[in-house]
Length: 311
Length: 311
Image 1: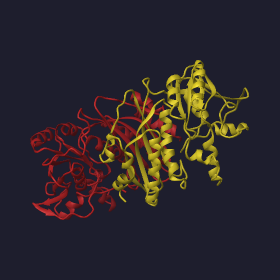
Image 2: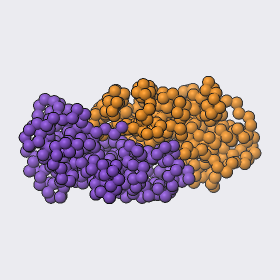
Image 3: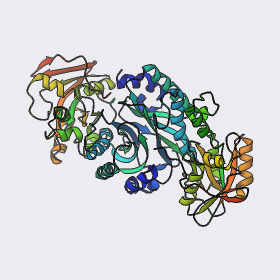
Image 4: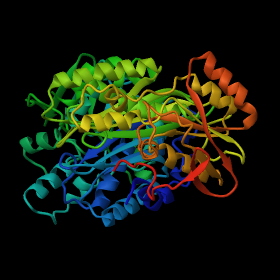
């Protein structure tokens, strides 16, 4: 089956907005809403970001969510997407159909419109890249660099579920409940953007490990950060310090890490409670530079390399 | 070397616009100029779109030009880019440096700003995808679908140079002058956009073979098209009909194929002459459907499959 057939059969039905011209033209027209528009791109590679035998439905959802995570962490609403699909010749068409259905459903669940893309052969393994735009609030994207001294550090959801799922898959425990968290990250709900627009002075998504990402947030703002490992909302029951450090240094959490002034605390807690959204205070910023981690009030020695990097 | 080091060393220097935040944030802010903005994405895969031993400078330029070709064919000016780079572990860092320099120079030559991207490992072979935006004229993007009955068909530059270069590489003639055209397509100059905005009723880039693309342009406009193979501006000296058909059915020309009313002919010829730009009339549209090719006034039998598709 050729590229044009693939597109018309599996992806054109997903591209229903007028600017997309049902993927029949060379380009798509971006919508130009009120307020700034941001863009991000994230790739998933077979053997690097997912296992060759991971179900393609979960790969599709992970691809979308990895990008959505970047957009919502900036207080923006996901808008329009362009897909690059490098498809291996030995994958059956049935796999493509399954991918496309899950991809379309996931886009729809976030209100994202597919407006363009490129499909090509891939000699070895599946390669996916998604470009996603997002509509910011009137104040623009919430950057990493706006954090103020004495702001508090917050994180959504739970940390470490993807790591536990990865370990389970590596040791053949495919029925482990955390496998789903590795394959399909559970993001903060879209409503987090309202809270971020209201309160956050700086934010980012946690994709390379909580501790390393906290350090980057502080660094971008010219500050130091202290993280209380006892306060981090770990997935599962975690008691040993080594395990706390390991889960806070792995990646793929796709939660939102944000800073807010102490005065915003009641607002944050009320907002989260009203929406059954999990938001936890895990640290604070100060002048200076670098990252310090604490457990039961005592400073913890950190491993030299912090922050997981794919690749 | 980790992803962040790569980005800061090789790509951050290319990202000088304010919205890009020197690639230090998770997202980039798209500029919102006057008039509609369009977007396209094109991928290049080692072993599919380029040879493993092609110089990385030419791969970088081909990546940019494959995307620029789509944008300028719509009468739009290239604007901002996001790069996905799947890098094989066995390629030395020196290759990355060479890629980045050529990539930056090529972007700059079109006035394109790099605003974001993603770098990742690739277990087998280099995988590149570029998302490119473009600023349209006040009339918006020139679509494929606006061609009118009795409009004439025009093409820029020459057809078949990439095919000749590909054949030369396959038979080991690396010094053949057309190898450069395969590795680095020669696009129409940016000034073509002024002509298209003035005169074109429909346009697209020729990337999948002249004849197949002409048929698609006609189809998108609900018309038939007749192409005069004797008028096509072939690269080199082409006399045999079989060779004319072969070169007009291969791909990678990256020229602009456009339709304009007959009344625009003097304007088109003057505009092209004033800018030393090659533009050739090669056919015409009529009611009905389908493609007919002629040579010396006689209709030519066409091969069943027309239009080259990568993959």
